[in-house]
Image (cartoon, rainbow, N blue to C red; front, side):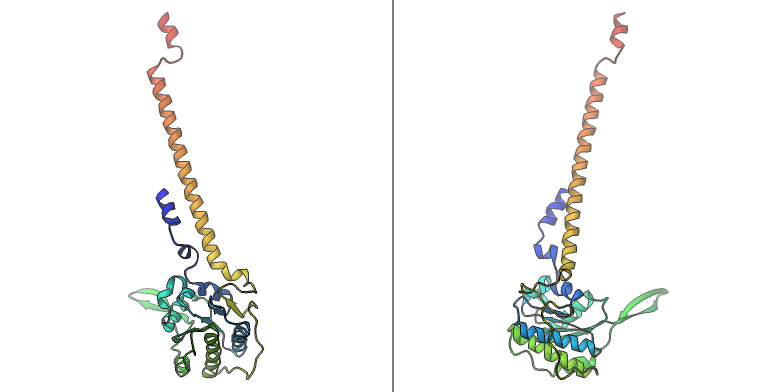
Length: 258
């Protein structure tokens, strides 16, 4: 048990607290922005585009990824936007929406599917189905890549991609729409520190994991302590029993004297 506690404590902080930051943020918000913070005007424009798309009938989640560090423990997927879109789509499987990924290397797209019941080898299984997204992929393919890895350029590219997806799916955005400032529900939330704090719920996934790990460690330590106390108590009882067996029992000396 002590070994388990030591092994848990030796885990890197990221592995214990947060594997993929975007999966936590996008559970509660519609836009994930990188640690390298885009300017408020640019990020609010993206938040407004996403809100306008939703109003037009295109529920959309967007992750803007500027560097490997934005991906936490899945940094190997950096500059592989389509692979990351597929991965993140599984993390957000319970949400009915499209998912857009923007990286310096380009764009990725995924969409939540439905479920269906199939019979396989005499057993019934429930499997997930996913749309093919041919229109969406074609629309993103003709877009120019982000102008640079600069956070503002990436975020502007994401706004353009949202508009392109709206046109491709028959849910066009209006010519203009109001910006949605950082921190407004349904708007953009930065991955890194900002002047406007993100809602507490955005960190719910990592906070719950940290709490569960703390409870597990305390439970293991308490169990280990109880085990030691029980072992010491049992040893004392054995020693007392040995002492009784080696000496005279009460009343025996009197009878022997008689």
